[in-house]
Image 1: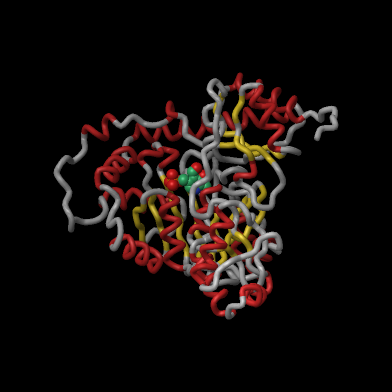
Image 2: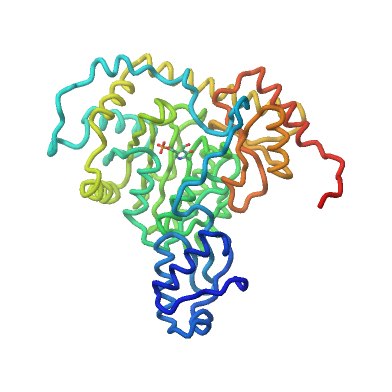
Length: 439
Ligand SMILES: Cc1ncc(COP(=O)(O)O)c(C=O)c1O
């Protein structure tokens, strides 16, 4: 409980502003417990309703989570702003960002040449029908019901819209641990409470998800393949096990973040079949390039209708120019071949690093996806030693809530020779050092 900070204020607005300032300036830290409503009301000589209202304001802004017997805690870092980018010194090999390999992205030349250049005006149909047809077909080919499909501005945008269609501030959402930072931050920024659920090679661990659901959870976010950063990918057995767990909660919204379909090195799998509330979100960012960010969202009719209605009073639609480019690329057989090549290359590069690490007795995780997750004893010192050897990698702390330390190494552009050298350098960085007394 926060004992080292004296809250000030006599109105709910003042109390909320004071606590917000303390959280932002680091006087109160993430996960610290705030006093109870009664305690703080007594301390400040105000009514419990005033403190309750202040907590409500902070909760809405995603700065605190929890209520009731568990108490109110300061949310994790960066609930309202993105985390600063990692600084990579000049000359270091940057393996911190899970970018696609530019050499494996399609050229836009043909798509731009065939673009319909007529001005598109307000009031026109919102989506390019051919794109909806392509999305529907691809979803159906993978056994995903696609009677309703919506176009969003990327996986994260789709995720935000689907969560907002069903959840209210304070609701709890099961998220993968480790998981992608921005998903965790997005959940917090929406005023929702992320409940970490451990993953293994096959995705969310059923017993842990069950436990989380017993504690009261309103939504679940699942990465069906290429899980970032751990590389988990669902298989049939895990699908069945998770379905049994999820099946007990008909009100749950189950969202699948299939953020890198076609290139992650794993088959499409879904938990959503026949569920009452669900969405599968597929982005083209990794396959076609992040600047063509657009997502196809399949879901139950009510979810899709809510997302679409909300879109109508906001952005309205995703640019037709973008939709046309994506349609053209996804209908091009040469792009299809390139996607197969990207899929194979990313798998080879990921596996090359895993093999190189195994040569040194280091077990890493990366069943699928664009990165490898390497458990380490100490993130900061291992990263520093790697940096001295010329490699910049991402600290696991950005991705994990309760999982132990690790590094995330993106392998999308890693060549065979580099994998071998990186394996050797990482092994050297992880070797126990003689310990020196230091103040
Ligand atoms: C798990 C996950 N979801 C979503 C995204 C981003 O998708 P988009 O660019 O479509 O928003 C990423 C990007 O790396 C990701 O790792």
